[in-house]
Structures are given as C-alpha cells and as structure tokens.
Length: 348
Ligand SMILES: NC(=O)c1ccc[n+]([C@@H]2O[C@H](COP(=O)([O-])OP(=O)(O)OC[C@H]3O[C@@H](n4cnc5c(N)ncnc54)[C@H](O)[C@@H]3O)[C@@H](O)[C@H]2O)c1
Image (cartoon, rainbow, N blue to C red):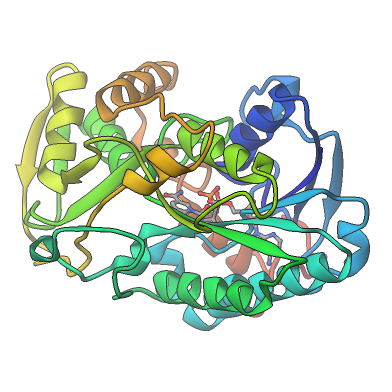
C-alpha cells in the first residue's frame, strides 16, 4: 500500500514509519517540522520513502493523490502545550484533522486512521470502572477537547466511500529516534536517572492506561490494513492487557528499574482531575492482526538502557531536545514560529 503518515517527524512517527515500511508499505511523510532536526541515530526504515513539508491546516488534495491509507499523527500533542496555546491546539488538532479528512476523501482515499487519545475520557475517575468505547467523554485539557472535535469532524465525513478509524491511544511510553521525556513513565525515569529521586507532584492516585509506541504503531498498521467495510467497529481504545496503572504504581515500576532511586510523592500539585481506567477488550479481540508486545516493566528497562547512553545531566535531558513544550517555547522566543505557529523564515 501507499501510506501517508502525517506528523512523521515527531515521537511516534519514526517508529510508525519503521513498522509500516517493515510490513512492505511505501510511506510518504507530511510534517511541518517543529522537531525535525531533533533526531538521534535512526535506521533507514525510520525515514519515509518520500517526504512533504507542510502544515495540515493548509494541506490540499494533491498530498493524498494515489494514497491508499492515511495515518494521521500530526498534532500539538500534549497537555502542557495545549494549556498554553488552547486556541492553536484546537485549530491544528481539530481544524487540521477536519481538513486532512476532507482532502483525503476528495482525493479518493478510503481508509483514514486517526491517532486519537484516551485522554478524552479525562475526568471520568476510577469509580466509573474500565471505560469502553461507548463511555461518555469527559475531556479536561484543551488537548483532550481537540481530540473530541477531531474525531467528530472525521465521523461527519464517514460514508461508504470514506471509513475513518479512531484509535484512542493510551498514554505512550518507549524509546524512539525522537524520544520524549515529557510523558509520565519517560519523565519519571528521566528524573530518577538524573537526580536519584522520582518526584510525583500529584498525590499519585490518578489512573492512566499505558501503551508502548510500537504497539500504537502496530494497531495503526492493523487498522490501515483492514479492508474497508470489514470491521464491525471503527473506534478502538488502544492499549494492552492489564495496562491501567495509578501514577504511584508507574513510579514504583520506574524505581524498581533504576538503581538507587527513591520515590517522593509530594502532592504539591494537588489532586490531578485527569484520572481514567480503560477497557481494551475490543482492540484485543476485534482488530485483526493486532497483538501488543510490550508491558510497562519491559518498557522501563528499555528506557533505562537508553538513559544510560546519555549523561545524567538534567539540563540536557529535561531541555528542549526531549521536552516538547520547551522546544515550542524556544521556537516562539526565537521568532522562528509566529503566534499562529507558522514558520516565519527567521533562523535559530
Ligand atoms: N504520545 C502520546 O502519549 C500519545 C497518546 C495518545 C495519542 N497520541 C497522538 O499521537 C499523535 C503523535 O503523537 P507524538 O507523541 O508523536 O506527537 P509529537 O508532538 O512528538 O509529534 C507530532 C508531529 O506533528 C507535527 N505537527 C504539529 N502541528 C502540525 C501542523 N500544523 N502541520 C503539520 N505537522 C504538524 C509536529 O511537527 C510533530 O512532528 C498525536 O496526534 C497525538 O495526539 C499520542
């Protein structure tokens, strides 16, 4: 198949690209490039066969011509970024997703896989039980709200000629050629490695489902490869078996993996309202070919081994190369992107 991956120059993108290329597909990447240069050594399969630079808010039909399936990753993609620029998050994640869907459909693409997020269950709380795909949305952050509108825009386009699939991914972890240290497991491991202390700023009780970026990529591959019309459902929570953890439990996995590390639950940020447990039965039983291969303990070992290749320097590991918000703030401070998050042409 010829596959277009938007947002291929991010954290998940290179791993997604590798999974698709190894499965024999020809990949075109489309990205504006906020993080393009921040890549570590990566095998050739982590790069697409073809690359287009552009903003999804302006994407047109021509990008989708001859494409069999789209995997849509491009987004402002976490809560801290969303919280400083809520309007841009909605314009890019909601509006940009709508535009990609419209243009893809116009170009005759039938299969469109959206990287949505379990964060749209937001403040549901553990008392609601393990939420399946029919659970009501309770988004807290601008990011989570933008995933609700992105999904709605694609659902409105769905018909016999265009079948979007929403993959509501759990919180990601894992090593990539563009590893991020701003996600809960990755972040706690980085703090533990650089300071010897894993500091949990909430009270540790919020629940998060967790998934490795390779398993996210395998789910997208399975969804892209499923013949149009063959699936009973087009919305899937993406995670694995027993992958709901409290933040305290995530910290315990990190501490058990790093040598000489202790946990401090400071509670200084109070009670985090984002707490949800998720049911993954549908993806495990009804997405043909999908079988997750990671668990949190194995992911923590992978991260520890990766961290040990780097100096335990907090300035660097918790700086703009590995923390998305800091990179975006640097781009803005250097006037490389404007208030609308478009490139200005100014050099760093
Ligand atoms: N990482 C997670 O925990 C997680 C969990 C669930 C879902 N997701 C979703 O998966 C997708 C990929 O996540 P990621 O962690 O790789 O994110 P990322 O921030 O690392 O990468 C996103 C990419 O999108 C690009 N992009 C942003 N705005 C763009 C625009 N207007 N036009 C073109 N390109 C643009 C960026 O340059 C970047 O390369 C996102 O949609 C995210 O919401 C991520």
